[in-house]
Image 1 (cartoon, one colour):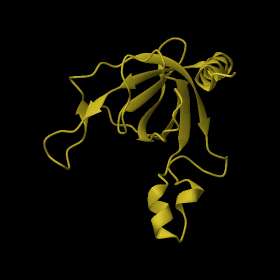
Image 2 (tube, one colour):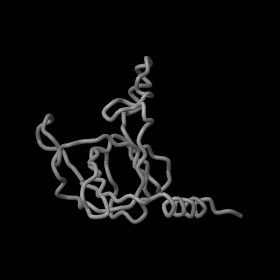
Image 3 (cartoon, helix red, strand yellow):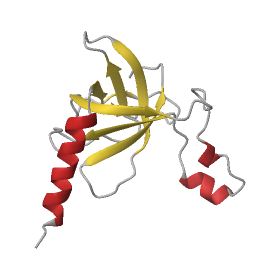
Length: 142
């Protein structure tokens, strides 16, 4: 009989070995006291590096524009779908702690230089250990 959890874990590992070629760094953030204050580095959580993949929307979507699924006349549905510029996917089994919405993801090149900085807009849960992080570019640093 097939153990579906083992099969899912093996599939997640294989997908990571094939697709996760980009280097990223997590920058945990926390809220400040004031509701309108910018986020700050979270003193209780430590950032970490990981390998993943990044996929941007179709070429018709310039950076900074909302995803077409949010441009709906159905207001209720539009609220459910966050706008995002790209999706970062990665296997999270070796991560020291979970990431959260509003944490920052820094995309780095082989020399460690920053290629892009993103903020996590949403993380749809599907029960697997391979996460899909919906992200938008940001210039701000916590």
